[in-house]
Image (tube, rainbow, N blue to C red):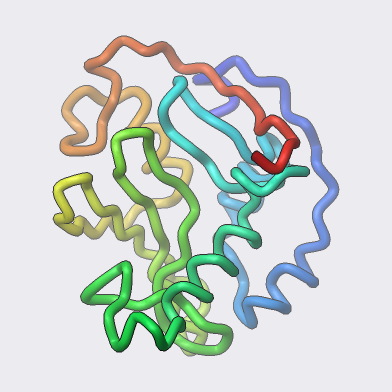
Length: 172
């Protein structure tokens, strides 16, 4: 991803023990590398990556906490925003958001605390259809940005380039 985007790694210091302690499960090793190198922000002006952001928009933990809170909101009944799944709750099994697009596509890992080390990617297209991928986060992002045949998620066909812009650091 660094080579593809021409990005200079930030080397963000991360307290993984605290983050993974709150989640009660480890995160994918390649995601940790992406997080430390890029922080949170936008690839190719359209693919949002959750990592570290001084603001809220691209901050991984903030977005996961919000998704979990909404998923647990009893005012919504037993309906989940990620039907037929649910958002991961510490120590359990569910989806953890890590990216999205301006078109409404959403990217998650299915995390099962009882099966650490397994991180299938579940991606939901804007039409609501779910797709499962047994590839790493880095490979998924790479294919989204550079593979014109990676449908329905590939954006290379739009010739947007392969850039990265870090999060703004503000809370808006």
